[in-house]
Amino acid sequence: SGNSNTVSYEDIFKTVDLILENQAEKTLAKILNMLDKTHYLQILAFLQTSFLKLLQIKLYSREYPTSEIARIVGQTEGVTYINQKKIQNISLDKLVEIKQNLSIIEYKLKTGEYKDPMLAFERLLLGGRLC
Image (cartoon, rainbow, N blue to C red; front, side, top):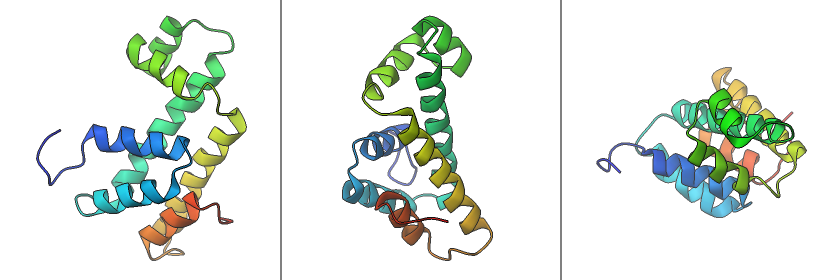
């Protein structure tokens, strides 16, 4: 997983898993660790992309086979299958909410409404109202 000064894909995937599992404290610890190595906007961008793909997989799973979904979202069939399993018991509404909240905190950080990235992540994960 590369040297210790870069954020690995493993870090991002683990963070996504922790968010899906509602493990707020562990997620925040993971993000804090990643903030030592990379800019918060990069972390947000990775999370945005990951959750967009999960959302697409959830939607497409209603009517398309895994092989077709994999092609649409640009993942291997194996990765898509693993992702389908991960979000099997997570509602579409919940995925939409996470994705929206990521967009809101990114916007508020970029506009300076939120000054502290860690506080923004805490609000995201601990269910505070974001807007």
